[in-house]
Image (cartoon, rainbow, N blue to C red; front, side):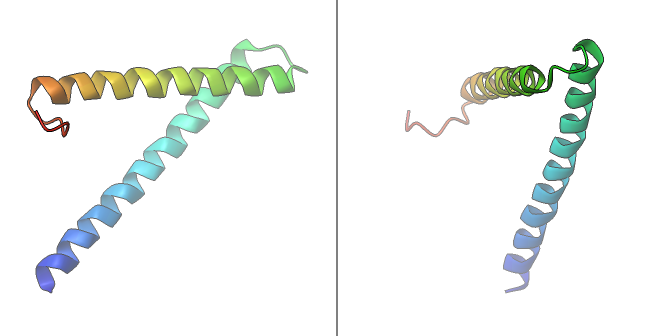
Length: 78
């Protein structure tokens, strides 16, 4: 019971810090896009922001998957 509690607590704290990091990146990227986009381009800015975040997520996901595969940590059953 005690071990399960510690494991669950670790997972929750790790997730909480991941959320905080995601919110920090959200603010940083939003500010960056606002800095380089002209004022009055609200909808265009939102789409640009969505594209930047999506591209960043795909790039990081692929990079981490490749690193995990090289380290033998992939779960595809090989």
